[in-house]
Length: 416
Image (cartoon, rainbow, N blue to C red; front, top):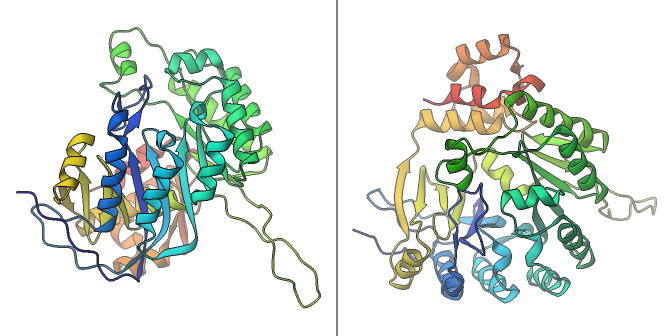
């Protein structure tokens, strides 16, 4: 039986990330297996109301599980993902953010929104900035028009460049570009041209993803029928190495397996005793995503959204219409829950943290779990170090350069 939604807890202590899933697209890209739907645009106004309703009573009740202790939390980051969040009007984004701000929100919290370049105008972007969005993630994927058509994208390269320029003119000083490699028909030359065109725009952050063919997608169907050819693993590795070379030479820090960020940006310091105003480093890493990689708590709202809090991981009903109906009836949207046992928590902390260049902080791990990584995973660490995939010392455990190319082989070793 579906449980009723809880009343809001008293605010304050734990800092969480808030993920807002916008489960709508105008069309579905051929590679996409996210929980998103085309042709449901008429549902968006009611869906926005449901998002605000779910946020108001965080955390949602869990089915068939003991209640989560009434948490005291503040929101440290907000991320609109999808789907295509840029289908929401600025007024609808403002409605959701107003619901979030009924909880304590950290001053200067990163508020990110994923956007399709074809959905944007200067007026739209200025309005998003005015309602509080301060980081934009543009789903560019490629600067090759033929490649974009092959992916089923709705924009072309010129539209992507125009969207980036408009974002800057609208006042966004934190803009990320998403790009993909290992695409059908893509060569190393094509990929390097895309990297060079992206770098010419000087974005603050880049996310570079190797295409994965998923069952149930058009790409999955075509690949199974022998109608889709993608670069082999060696070619994809060459493209990944090219990203290291090009982005490193341009001054970007490779802080996570798929993510690069500018290391320093302008940020005024207070006037010192000598009367000189200086600059301090600005961190352009994706602050919301860092919470996932550090295995910290977060709430997800919306159809199919996931949360991790209070020793449980739970997922909402995937159907947007079903989600809206449950919230309207005052019922919990949570469809499933899993208690995170200690062995799973330690293993996931290792595999997620190793995605980061900073790796695993040994003292932080010991403080969190009461034991060192070596006490939990000694034989695995020794084997992976001997294989040249990890570096281990008394302070940190990190992937080697080679380990970044073989990350999945490393990560699976830490799961129970």
